Length: 402
Ligand SMILES: Cc1cc2nc3c(=O)[nH]c(=O)nc-3n(C[C@H](O)[C@H](O)[C@H](O)COP(=O)(O)OP(=O)(O)OC[C@H]3O[C@@H](n4cnc5c(N)ncnc54)[C@H](O)[C@@H]3O)c2cc1C
Image (cartoon, rainbow, N blue to C red; front, side, top):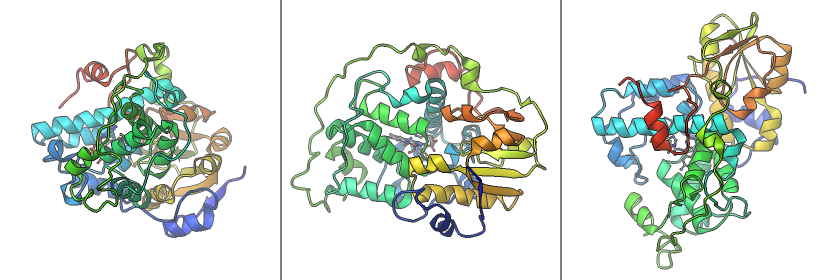
């Protein structure tokens, strides 16, 4: 497959309309959350987590939301978890602890995905409906419609409504979670398989044995006024919580207890220099100026390749692609950058590149690397149990600095 140059001088929407035919789904649009290192830096500068602990789950009105909306930047390492962790060192104790706990959830998802790989697409510890086809979101309900409208038009949701939608899809409406997570993944501009799969597995009970129930109660508490405007307010399908169930426990997966190949999970811990590099190749897992391969090679030209085959299959939303384009446009003001549509794996076979390790299954397709740089973990993976967040957290957090 040949490489096609994408000229990033046009607007993101013009580029998508002109050059991404058949490679995205839904209507054309951009998110209100701007892509790029400059936007990420500004968001970090303005970060104020006072009252985060109390307000992080608020949905409506927008002014009451305590969520920071940093996730698109964190997901693509425009802001590293370590950077964000340190940025809140002077915040009020309760808010700082709660916020850092959530950063750890992000790190936990990365550790899980790095170790388990595509196994994370299967029920992890308990049986849950994974495979039934069909749409689990009835949009006659105002609460569901509002959330899905926000997802489709802005590509982002607070954690609370992500849980509502995952629960409604599978716990209440008995549709396979794999399809629901795919739909969400396509639209979220922070979409990561690690966090999205973890979020779905934990909400529907596959990760915990305790499915999260979604009912009118949460909507009235977190989004007052929504039910009042609902056509089904007198006939609410979620008036009561779904019946509690005790899902069947699956045979224990030894990978959850022990990592037989920790170096493979972690990637290199120091740079591996095999040859001189001619380019820095960026991947979506590390798009920031502090990307280790980029920072170590300040003089080298930079390349980013939209994976054409993957895009055709994934059908991401145009908002997500626009976020990448905005990020690349911003980078092109500081570095010599060429953006292509094509096959990034062939490029590394044919060109000596410097690249940063990414803890995702597809990274192993990059071969013949001239230079490989370590992934910016918040905490290095360990070989012990990742069965529960709490025990993982206790082990991993030892020795962390405040
Ligand atoms: C069904 C479902 C799907 C999800 N899909 C994704 C996804 O694709 N990508 C993604 O980054 N997060 C995902 N999450 C986690 C979480 O909802 C988002 O990270 C969070 O809502 C982002 O908003 P924020 O930046 O304002 O978070 P804040 O509340 O301000 O938290 C700060 C940061 O902590 C991390 N974080 C917060 N909550 C969680 C969590 N529950 N799990 C993991 N990390 C967390 C994120 O990096 C976030 O940016 C999902 C959660 C659920 C329940």
